[in-house]
Image (tube, rainbow, N blue to C red; front, side):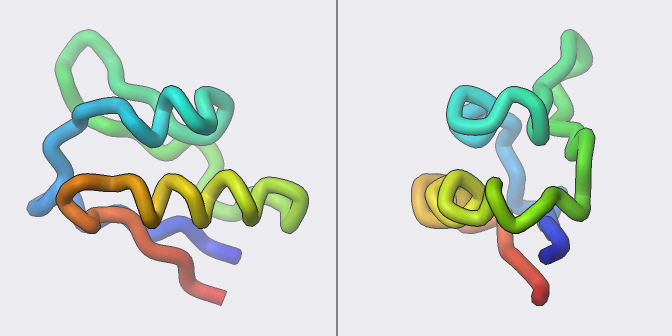
Length: 63
């Protein structure tokens, strides 16, 4: 699984960070960073929740 973020759409609102703080991080510069683009499968349910809850649909999963 690979996490893909469309940074042109991302508003860095940190919803994904609240769901998975070990994977997503919004820093003081107000940009989203993906700390682990290839998390293990155990994180899939939470990553899928991030995809669904992203208000700009900026996050996707590639298998």
